[in-house]
Length: 471
Image (tube, rainbow, N blue to C red; front, side, top):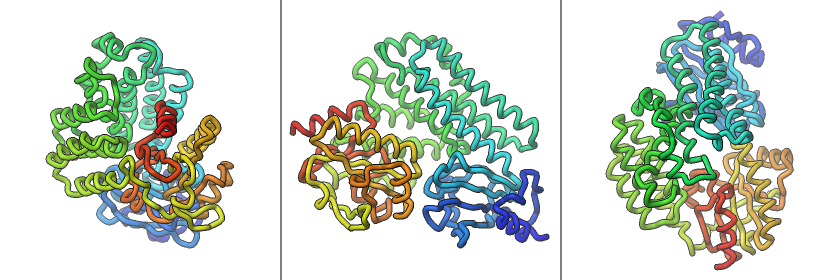
């Protein structure tokens, strides 16, 4: 049987025929699978943040794709939301996922599947641990207790990885990836700990930490571009430079990761401490993007923008940030919010002028961020009860119209507040400088922008609502 026929047979049997013990072949490298409850008719495959291909689903919501001249390593696969996968030449990997519970239902079979199932398991374990750390207020523990708590979580993960390598033969590169996921999530939590600990003066607390608390930094590599796809590596780098920047000014100003001072120090530190161009570009771009997307400081924004544009060589990164910088001019305080076209639950086409007739806060959601969507809708309802002068507008992006309708029904969202954005996300980015679902607009009864860079989850959001009423 040819490899193509073998894989097609596996696909037609909903992947049942492809066991994790399948053998590597010399016929090519294949990625295939089935998307349950698809939100579009294609899957996107990327590597190093560059498009590999857009793969169409057939009439049964399945796909089969041969990867030409594949490079061993980490790839990103997207369908409404994304996940990292690991591929080697001559792998034949099949996946199956239900978009209603993307990460919880994502499974792999075929040759190369065990590595990918391990990464999904580690990802889900991290999500569970994050919830546990909040529930048990682990970040509020004293340093010694905190160290024991996260060391215990790390040991559980390391045992899982060690057991995997006893049962499976892999190359050194994947071992490095698996151990990086374990270690750098641990490192990231150590970095964020003093910034998340409350109840004491943060400066005093930072200075009180024992010198040995950060001994692990001697093992850290700030310049490994091969790990840049890993969320754990990204989280560590971001958390590290947030803390490092604060230590540069912590005796002069309070900690504010969105302030001009913080981001100025952060950009300078990244330039000084990172040598690899790819890692430096990622960190500088992420820093300036988050600042521009969340700050109303026009003068500070221009200063940091100019610093960034002088430093970055990548034309693609420069184009993204320039577009965001120009888009910010559309949503300055005092301007009317761009009059976007929206669709309501009855399929009527409306716009902001038609639906804004009282002070409002506007947030965005997608079924690809299920927990965010549910939390935002619940919080919006409670805020409207607390501040009845306001109404809220919930705008869906990146879903199909049908999927949007199903999600509203599934989670019992208030249909009178729900709207569907008709254009692509790129259009929202251009018109509303939207590059994150955390962005929330506060507008007056005439649609005049009070704050275009609010965040419904911010501890300061209620103060911003009150300030809007007092204008």
